[in-house]
Image (cartoon, rainbow, N blue to C red; front, top):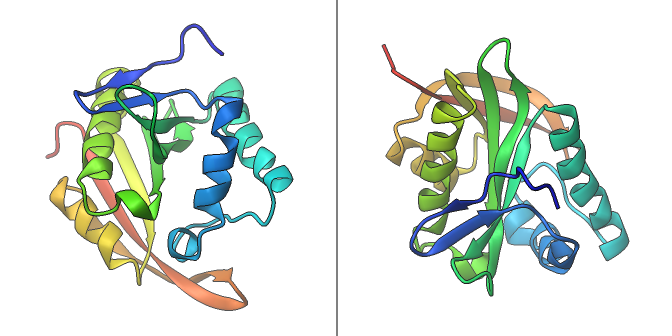
Length: 179
């Protein structure tokens, strides 16, 4: 575990570095049909899920992102994941992504975590822009981003293939010191 990893906390949440012990919950989330319906990756086994944990570690090592495991403040409950990838210090921007186990949907957990991570990105990473790429059909995610003042910038139509079909992605962005 990295000593300089930025643990983020609120009264009810603890965003911390992924531990090997989180792998079962990551697999539970990234194999759940409701979670992966609009998420870019999914896994069919615990062994495959290790690739996701490695991806998190590589982002940190390469300086191209940082992801947090979202836990209850006492660390006993694992809720989901949130983080930055495609981080560019030169362009002062990053893409944000997140997912939550369905048992915790509708409780404001991801809204709280997203707010915390955006503050961290603007204040500590010195980002100017945080962007989100959202499948056009994912209305819950769009609603959450709108609540936190992300602005819709446009749609990339049929830009990716998922489950052998083309999907469109909506682009949202939030700025530090918006103009």
